[in-house]
Image (cartoon, rainbow, N blue to C red; front, side, top):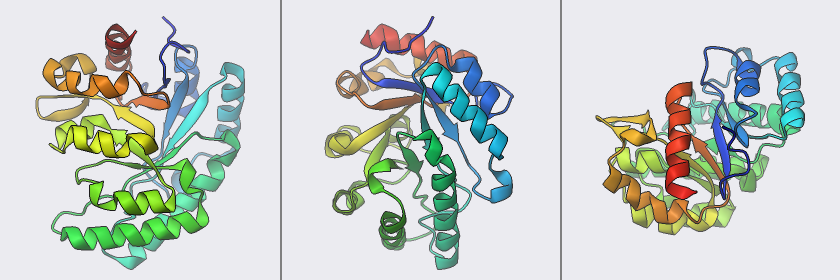
Length: 252
């Protein structure tokens, strides 16, 4: 069943549902969803698609009227305590931002990873420096900062000031025991991307039907009014489409 234009938000799925390349994955899901989240976990030039793949993605976008959103590289940490690593991460992000520009992505989602053993104040300082630097080389309105395993609430005012948008990863809020309602309320006005996935058995990125119904019900007030892009971050085809059906039962 196709779910194009059925939800109040634009429904996206990851570019890694089948053991194949970007174009093959996009072509298989394109008839059923509004968009695709193109996953890039490594930012080195040798790890990025060649021109032929980019051309294929553009052709598929035009044929199926797809939107794309970009998951930016995570192999170099924008919030590293080491200035050199932050600089390499900034270069990797700018490289991919420019390469993907012909696809007109609705968002580019970034991570501000919290390194184990680093004081929160040092993480916050490093994150702030990278956000300021990013805002000078990329349009902050096209960047969504994702909620990970540490609260973004201390950075909220800076994110507003610089003009960044937010990726509310609702699965992460649950998995890492972060303040769900407070985080949603604070960031909902700037939220342009939602990552949704089930949390069960101490693991995230699982099928939505596996989630505790009481936990999922806490997300419904926000999901029922959300109108931007939602990516179901479940990385295998069968549980991903099961999750779409589950979401349709709850929202349609």
